[in-house]
Image (cartoon, rainbow, N blue to C red; front, top):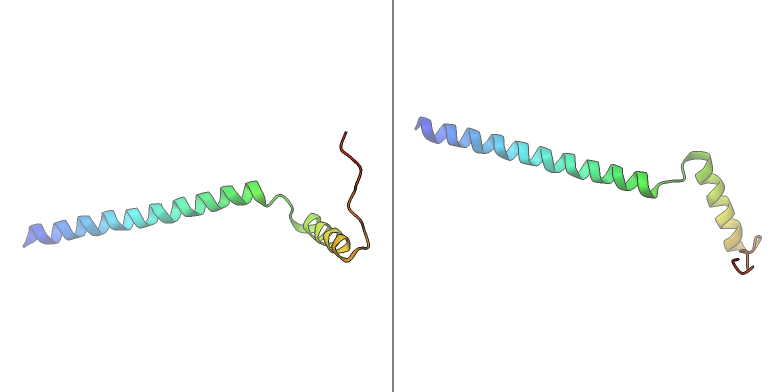
Length: 68
């Protein structure tokens, strides 16, 4: 009887640690991806969106010069 409770407690603890680790790992990987891909923030992001909207509406035209 005591052995069954002890085993259940250990299994519950291992499960809780496993779930916590998975949550930590997901959070860590999301943070890493944000650091890589979210390079434009705040004011820079707003300026980029305005320029992109101007290009899409035809006010500005993309540079057509060949690369050197």
